[in-house]
Length: 226
Image (cartoon, rainbow, N blue to C red):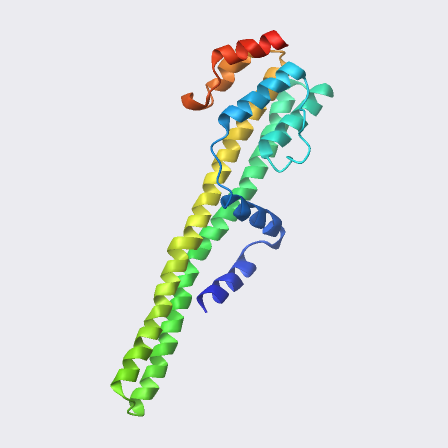
């Protein structure tokens, strides 16, 4: 009752057009990965160095890669930095807003499993009352009482150990994707301005945790290779 009822409510409440994003987002939660700031900064600097994005095919599900790819196209089409910032900024906002809506919808489901569990308990108690009226053996009533109360426990477990944490993780993932996309957007604007690798390194490094920033010597080697 708890699982079936929660899934039924989810089908009703979560917008149908989000089903693909929901499945993909939940699958991603079961593939833990380290925070990728260093990798993203490296790819952004490679954009400035190579003026292209090698091996991007097959990775378009990553928002920051879509921002880099579309930003490169906008630069090549001659859009101004202000228009690029406006266009890509809106793409980031809409993409992250979509993931946050999914996360909020999943979190909203957390209030339903306890209700379904309580419903199961109430049905169990109704059955116990019938047995009391029929003067059923007390030992059997104790077993039925425990079974009835288990439904409430299942409802609390599903809500607090599965549904609520998944919603929280989806919201956290949305925040991370927004941070990654903001770095990519800044890299596109630096590419538009023809900034040097060293300048780009300093600006992008300010947007990531210290432990995730590239070493300055690595940037110098990239610039020498260019």
